[in-house]
Image 1 (cartoon, rainbow, N blue to C red):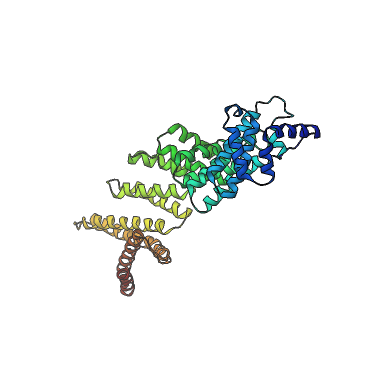
Image 2: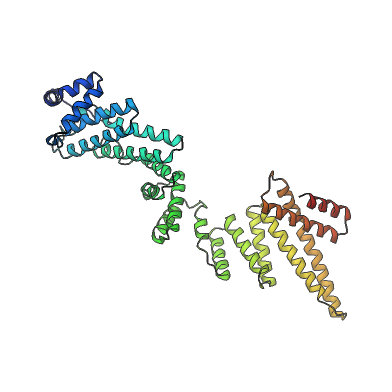
Length: 410
């Protein structure tokens, strides 16, 4: 809110004082002859003894701002800003509050606010045009203008958080990361629980993580978790810190799953890692395979996606292969060998039946997608192979032929 508290005596006295030194300038301003006013104010301000006089800086700001608007001259607008900053700096040292910022008060602070508005408007225009560097430049200058208004207590707030946010966003879009950090940090340090600020914390955490600045990375990650505890955005940063050691990594993921029991990304990462640990290495114990089955069921519980169902299909398919390998290794005809082979045959049949619903679900979900990425086509192809194997096992040639045709057409 602007304040205008001038007595008639003060106004008259001030007007008389200004007339003594700036009569020609003020007359040109009143007549709208800003080019003439510029010549006169430039001459006045070229005299070093006038550099310490606040009124000269005020009139320079007023004239230059008017000309900047007329001519769309950004350089002249910067000169207006510099002059107004100088004016407020000098006036800020005036001890008598009744006459402090007198020239701007008589102007109803119109010029002071207008300079800021002109930079904001230029910034918004550039932002809409996706000219990020120009948008950032103008927003930053508008914040400089806001600064003198705030110090003079001409605004209701000490910070224009919305404009600071846009300044940071323009810098980020323009790939000026250090500048984005400068302004985003102001917002983040205020600890405002506004969901729109989640992206601010994400940027800061990622920036400091990339810079290997653990202290600042942890600072903003802790802030973010406290402000937005239900957001799953922070998990990706915790996932980025997982160990390269397989056993340690799986243990870390298990701890994260306890912390975030319904987080799909963490559970899927754990399933993928455990799957590879079992089948790419020599860790295929029954206990681990059972653990993997339960983990995949949990992922599907959270979100029954094509990839989650595909992993279960492949897991059971691998179990079938392992059973068949064990069966082929039994060459004896002793009763215990026959009994063992019979048990394995029954187990194999049960695994085929367990695999079918997941294979069909995988096929259904991938087939419903309008376009498949290369890796998704691979997954669908392997799933069709699994369905062919199932129906060959069941001795259903019509189904075998159907899925083989689908496989060929993929």
